[in-house]
Length: 427
Image 1 (spheres, rainbow, N blue to C red):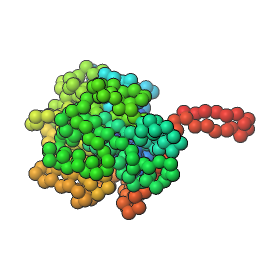
Image 2: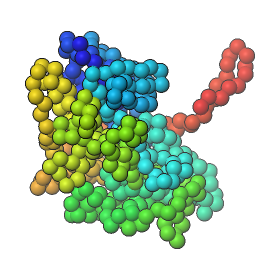
Image 3: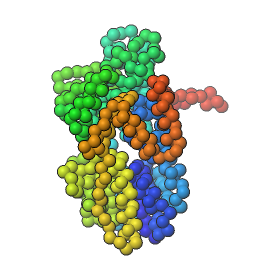
Image 4: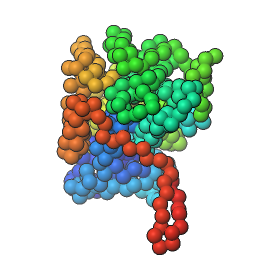
């Protein structure tokens, strides 16, 4: 019986596991340092209080409970020995016949890792709830403030990075200020908030056509978002952002400017690109190690292309399924096939009823694009419960301009132990 180890429970790993599930001649172990599968395309909606974490995340064990040949381990993989075919995690070491690496990426701060404390990125539920805390807390602080300079700082939101994540976060903050919170406060007017989207390049959304990017910039403007391009950030601290000689005082700074791959590729000594992604062969295996596959954001796949495939959910999903089918072909004595990506286009939402979509020569914008965005994202959610509750909340928000997850959860909280009356602190 062949043992397949899958590292990562994202779109690639999870879809590969499903294909390999209940195969009598294959044993699968899926390892992830979280116990849940996260639908990352909607993570910004958790950060912006539109959805709660449970609505875009599902326990991996629940998803794979029906597959008797799959074991799920919550652990962190620290290394791979390709020669011995051993995966080492913090709590165990396992031998494999086939290995699928789908560990994903994290935010890159271009050598300034100290910026992360002041400008969190958005890749995990923990980061999303922290961003939500920061965004909502500044309005509470502003309500108590009487000093004009402090009020201006509280009311300034800076998003660094003009890709889809940055655009979606900026648009969502604009909606919160103009609609959701507009009537909730007595001493402040949230509509006066200043939202600044900063991009180092010549325009936002560089992967989209210039016409669609300009449309997105215009839509952001209607939500009160100032778009600043050709403005590389030179420093970030607890008080604001430096852009060359210009200083922007801001209480809330969010990072969406770049990513780097999991360090596992460099640790293994295999070929990686400048972002640390593992260079993949035509069948998504690693050079000189045909038993090791790489998929999703961790893979640098450029066969037949001028640039590697982007880090999108459809890419990871197709690659995970393809790798699993290639393993099944090989165990059945058949030859492997080479990966071919079916391009399903790209999309970004700017706010309520506003989005842009590109699929080949097809261009959609406005309400129709937003409706397509809604349908596609609901379709790709894992469970029926997720689909139902997300749909319910979106319909409610669309007609009522309300957001149902506006809870400020501090990093530290206090409780009293009844039997001693002693106060404790947990973080």
